[in-house]
Length: 258
Ligand SMILES: [Zn+2]
Ligand SMILES: [Zn+2]
Image (cartoon, rainbow, N blue to C red; front, side, top):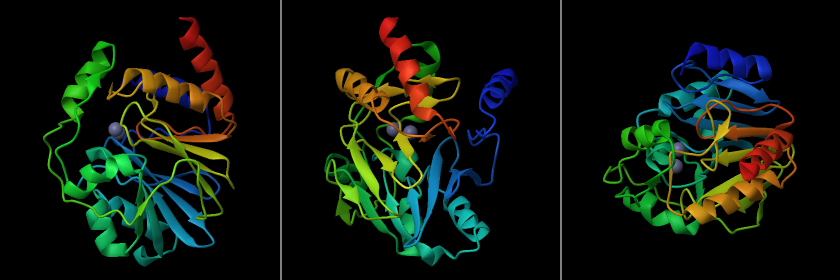
């Protein structure tokens, strides 16, 4: 990504931290109680709650040290990570999960439709690349359906619409399209939406690299644009610290009009 684009994003949103994994190697606070953890070219998020720490997604394989470093940076120890919630079962979101669970004993959560791939460690369902040269290239470079990972057991299947009694309340929103078992997660106390791969925020809000189902993707993007929240965290790209749902609504309106 050209430097100019990073500067443009940072200037437009001074509270946002560049977090593509190439630019930063340490965790950074997004809002009070939430920290983005760089996991290669993907993000994980740590939430501080009265019931311990919660991790959203677990990045590429071999990145567990970034999570443990972030936990220690908060003055906590790895065994204080109590919950690991996945937005979906792709290799860049579950890659370090087995190593993290081994060290922490965290309870794992995922939508039932993606559990089989996580528990087998692959192969993964194929994706149709999104439109545009950069998305097609990224899809080829970063997504390999035949990849094999260390399997991770899922302790609790997520139920669509449920409010998990974790960290003060996390709502489970089914957002299929990129992956059939994709969920977005709304952390109520901080009004922060964990978008997963429904959108990336690389050079503005945009499509992920590919889809299992194009129509479901549109419906899921529309669904998120109809919600009210303040902050947003993405599987890939720059988190947004405030006014995020306005940003989503405007982008969706522009996209729909195009
Ligand atoms: Zn994905
Ligand atoms: Zn991803």
